[in-house]
Image (cartoon, rainbow, N blue to C red; front, side, top):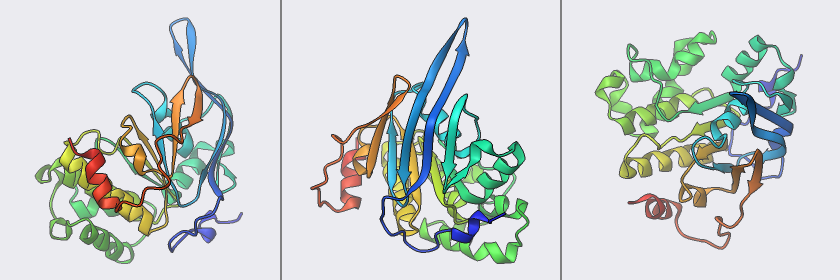
Length: 263
């Protein structure tokens, strides 16, 4: 079997139209009483390598479900999900878990840090569980902490960190194993607006520098102005919305980010 890691990106991505994630006729519904609510109903779409794609929609529209399907946490009722031509929907649960661990990074709304582990230990834990030696993985984790301004907090426990600092640690954890794909589910939803600016700036900067593909679920139309592509999740479909992207904008990204997210 070909190891999918053999073709992993290690430098800045060359911007192409290559699809790193593809949905083919994807269907997902949930039983609600005596009826089924169809969150996705025959969706076929691809997400480009090295790009930031935003999924826009209100709570309950299916944004988180879509992310869960994209990484194999949930299984669809029909259709397939491909990541770099690997059909994760055709894997066993065990193989899908290993694939997700090795190739996908997550940034959640509620941080999900383990309280009994230090900042550094939280970042390297997934790789240690994969059998990697601490001395081999610690330098990259420390470098990420330095990039997010937390180099001096490596031995601090989560309860001593602010919400914004915890989310910065979560971003480091998502990127530490050099994943192909980063999924973010409302990453600033649990933060105040000022802290959200800082966290979003770091997330976009780090994923862009590393050439990562970022798919983010959000209910904020303002955040989507920073994306390469925007899809609205509505009525069981994904509808691309090009109206929120101004291709002629030449503003500095950092200043633009502060402008659109500031209260």
